[in-house]
Length: 314
Figure 1: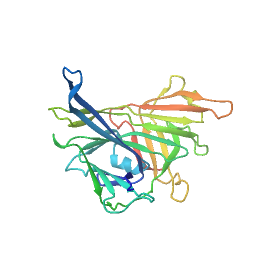
Figure 2: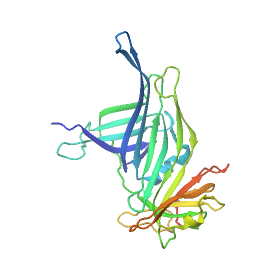
Figure 3: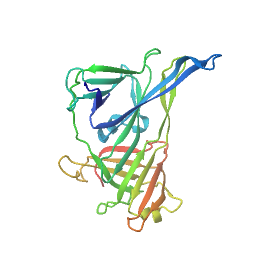
Figure 4: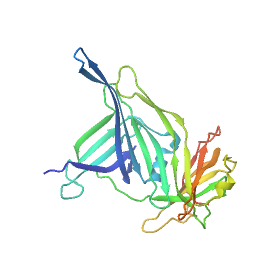
C-alpha cells in the first residue's frame, strides 16, 4: 500500500530558507451563496468569498526578525518584486522515513502576501518560538492567490539547525529585576498585537489588498523575583526615560549558552508605555511567582519596540 503522508520540510520567504519549522496550518474563510426555491431545499451554491491564511512556527528567531527588519510593520511579498513564499512538504515513505525519490514533494506557493509575526513565547527551558502568519492576496482577479503543486522533485535545500534561544534576564526602567547572578525570569511572551484588514471588491472572491491597521503589542513575564509587587504598586508605573528591556539568551551547538558579553543575543526594548503587575501565585509547596506586563506606546518618533538581534546582555 503506497504512502500518502507528508510532513513540513521547509519554508522559503523571499529567498530565505527556514528549516527549523513546524505547526503549519491553513485556514480558509469561505462564504457561499446558497439559494433555495419553493422546495425549501438549497438548489444553487456558488463561492462568494475565499480568504486563505497560513501560519507556522520556527525557532529561527534571529533569521526571522532580521528578515522582518521592523516586525511591527510586517513583511511585504509582492509578485515580481520579492521572491515568493514557498512551503515544502515532503512525502513519508511507508516502512521508512522521508522520501527523496522523484516527485516526492508538494509545494505551496504564494506570490503576493503580507507576513506578520503573531507571538513569541519563551521560557527558561524549551527553545523559544515565533509564529508567523502569511496572508495571501490575489495577483489577478481570476487567479487564486495560492498555488499547490504535487509530485514535485527534491528542492535540494541546505537544511540547517543553528539557532536556539531561551529566556534571559529583564530590566525594568533600566533596573535589573533579574540580576545576572540570580536568574528569575521563568517564562514570558512577546505578543506583537498586529491588526490587519483584508479588502476585496469588484465581484472578486479573493482578497485584493491586505493592510496593517493597528499595532497593540504587549510583553508578559513570569518571575520568581517579587520586586514588581512593591516597585510598581497596584496601579503600575509609567515607562521612564531608561528603556525596559527583555533579553533572549542564545544557546550554543554542543554547548550551553553563549557568553553574555558576546553580541549574539536578542533584546526587545521599550521606551514608552506603562508597566504593571497583574497578579501573583503562591502555594504551600511551590515557589511564589509574579506576573509582569509591559504595554508599550508610540512615543511619536521611534518604533513602538526596538528589536536587536546581535546584542550583549548587560
